[in-house]
Length: 87
Image (cartoon, rainbow, N blue to C red; front, side, top):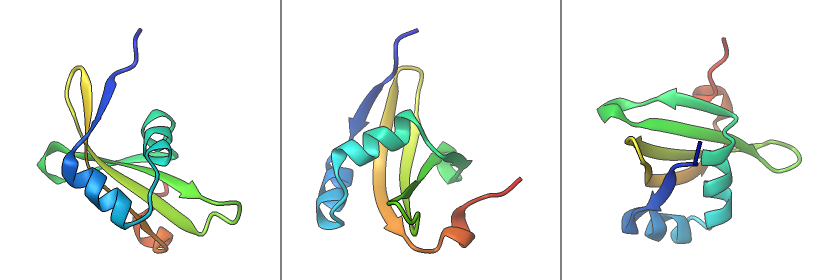
């Protein structure tokens, strides 16, 4: 099965540049997330712990349809305990 296309919106690209988040980080998080949590408006947040010490969390807000992942925005946070869901 072919992988879905990932489309990064102009808003997301602007915010990624401003927040110093690389495209490769966003793509890797979508392709192999540490966790996916539901969000509002039918979106999902793909999450990955960053760095050797895992002290930052990259959150990528995605609207998914049948063929494409639409990246709405992406940001890093140190509030891992707030956002990381445990079973």
